[in-house]
Image (cartoon, rainbow, N blue to C red; front, top):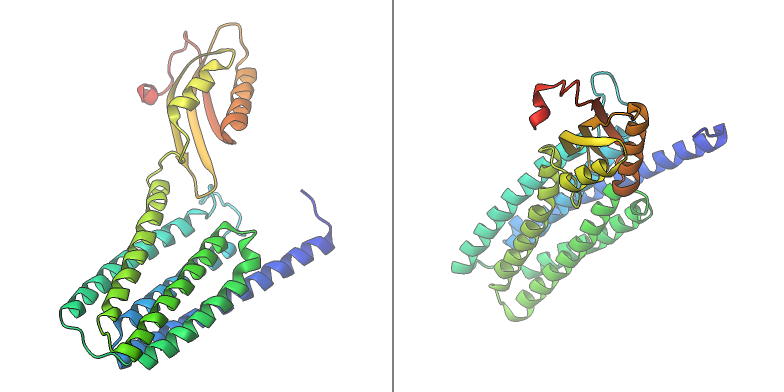
Length: 303
């Protein structure tokens, strides 16, 4: 769709302003992560280190979202004909895998401290977790507007709100240590944070793996697509049907269709594409036409 020059310039400024907000959010989360790790080592609180890991995951998710915003503006090339959308998927797989490993390590450390709980300096825990809560809220404010227009930023925004809840839990734990010297509360809260991170990462990594393994989009079945194609007038048979996700937001389908005698192949192809777009939202469709007389032109027709 054409745009006038003024509108294009405004959009460019909005994109730059959005990038700056995300960059600031990344910076404050990285500074917070470093401060919490140092504070956790000084105070002896593994719960504070666990919260630092969670805040670092915020920064990582924001970096992925920031990179996606930048990469999404790059056009497809002859060498990268599908574009660069999967760069975000690959980065997400690395991030989630790392996060799962860290969550398991934190769980192990928490169990060891349940067996032999060390002393914890509660006031440092409360102070740094309080700062973390403020920064979580600042980060949420920076990304709130962008979250309404970008699924990547929205995921990071929601993740950040969850971290705010985690910081509240650490504050409660530190307060209990100050008031009652209940040292077991620190590894218990660490286990809860570790379990939450593990649950979150494990639930999110599945869709990422599905995209990289060329799986069909969730809720879309090849059998249903085949049945719909065969209902189109002039389609005698459908084979060599493949359905996969190109990236997070788009899918592709290819198939061989046998055109019945007396029907024009271009008309049948157009009708099939219209049906797939209307019923399944599939617009990236590649079809090869055949007749019973010509037979399948590919050795893969039995697929």
